[in-house]
Length: 115
Length: 111
Image (tube, rainbow over all chains, first blue to last red; front, top):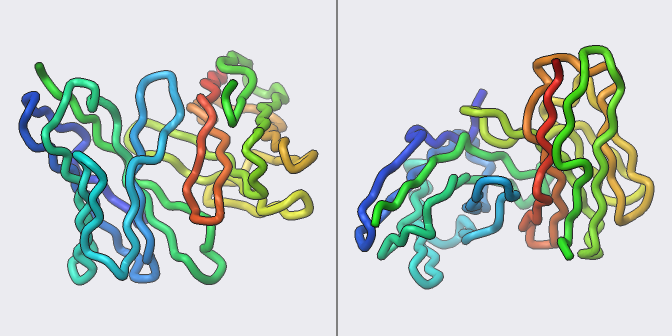
């Protein structure tokens, strides 16, 4: 049972435009969400996070939006740059209880930004 | 130098062989994890350890074992490798804010 889903395996965007990557989750206990970026031959690196007490978090060109009622989050990259081309993973965690410290990842979305 | 170091980077082995993947970290974190990445499935948790005396199974622990030799070292073993264990394996540590820091990965192929 995939508790965190990224339904778009790939996304292609023109340089300078907005990239929107989507993520859905089913576990209502999840209250902390993270996005990771992965380049080929490297491990994933942390990009941005959001807790369930917020509905938006911004860091430079990257903004994450959380819609708790829809169990949906999205990552916006504006403007997109060719160096943003990578695999993006959404991850979720429950801050309390036995799930603390364990992240559940989505399948990943391959973003390609064309010059 | 990398904060989380995995060895080897690549490994080809045969069905039935025992192999060990090693991980060491210099971040000083207590928590360490082993994940595997498969196309279309994302990253799945195999085992995790919150301190030297703590070992916990993740969602796909069957066929794997781990050893936490020290705060800085966490190794993953496949006692008898099988072809569906062919995957990209990642070791990670986490800080108290649950941010994971990953190694560069070990590509394992079981023939």
